[in-house]
Image (cartoon, helix red, strand yellow):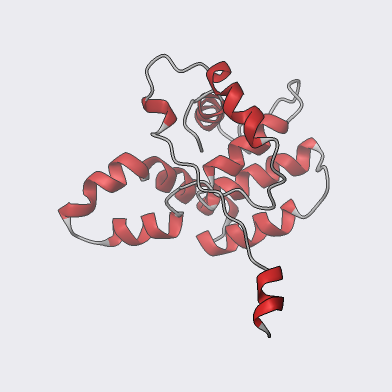
Length: 167
C-alpha cells in the first residue's frame, strides 16, 4: 500500500481523561451537560471506557499473592461473586456466558423477556455495565421473577444505574 493510500485510512482517536467521577464530591449529572454537549458534536464509531475485564479479575484472584488482594476487593470481588452465581444458575462458564450475551445482543430491540435473559448472561460474564444498561431499558412495569434475578441483584442493578461512576 502506498504512503498516500495509508494516509487516507488514518484512525482519529480522542482520549478524554478525568478523575473517577464517583470521587467528585457532590457531583450532579447536570454538571456534565457541557462536556456531553461538546462530545455530541463528534460522530464516534467506538467509545471505550477503562474497566478491568472479568477474565483479568479471575486471573488475579486465582493468585495466592497478597499484593493483589486490594485490587480484587476494590475492583472485583462483587463482580466475581455475582458472575459465579449466574454461571452456576445458567450452567455456563465465563467464556460461554460472554459468547451467549454477544449472540443475544445481536437482536434488534429485544423484548422484556429476552432482555432479562441478556441481563443474566451479562452478569454471568461479569459485565455489570452492560447488565445495568439492559436493566435500564426494561419496561418499568416489568416484574422480574426471583428465580431469574434475585432481589439483591435487582437492588444492586438499581444502585449501579444511579451511580456516578463513569462506567
